[in-house]
Amino acid sequence: MQDQLSTTVLPTTVLIVPGLRDHVAEHWQTLLAEKLPRVRTVPPLEANKLSCAARVEAIQAELDRIDGPVILVAHSAGVLMVAHWAATARRPIKGALLAAPPDLDATWPDNYPTPDSLRANGWAPLPREPLPFPSILAASSNDYLASFDAAAALARDWNSELVDLGEVGHLNPASGFGEWPEAEALIQRLEG
Image (cartoon, rainbow, N blue to C red; front, side):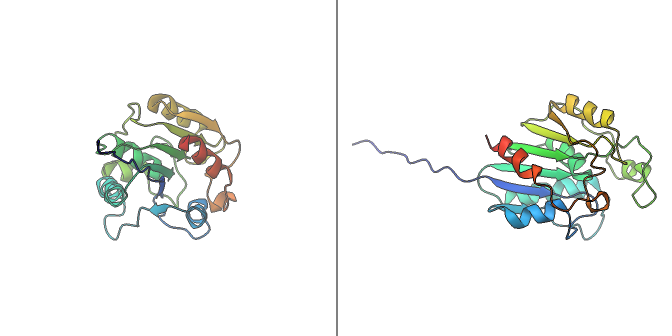
């Protein structure tokens, strides 16, 4: 009699990768995390908050705690963190939703870190090679941290599907977003 191997397919876990503001109660990522059945969030850093290397290590640490397939859901600087993580990725990823990536070459409002301070903390150069997993880059036509053209260039370089969200600002509470129902639909597309 032959041994029969049973294959258990584990459900997909969504890993939320916040931007530099970390967790904001009314942010769409926080609200999404409350709704999904299998979700984890990269925790805020206690020190070196602008360190790209520390944030990439935090992504890997969370991934090390997850069994089964993973979809990354990143916003703002979290998108840049995912690009840096992917350049040295040590595990396969099912896909990534990359929302409203900032442009390190743009001039940002006063209440944000300067692109120069991010460069000094390892954010540049930003990896521009195709990502080693399927991805959807959702971009705004009036984001104050990046032009649509800059986001579209990232989508081309990363081989990401580009989704034009229209005029949604930076897709954050300051731009009127709390809930973002389209996120769930985009995650389902990555789920297959």
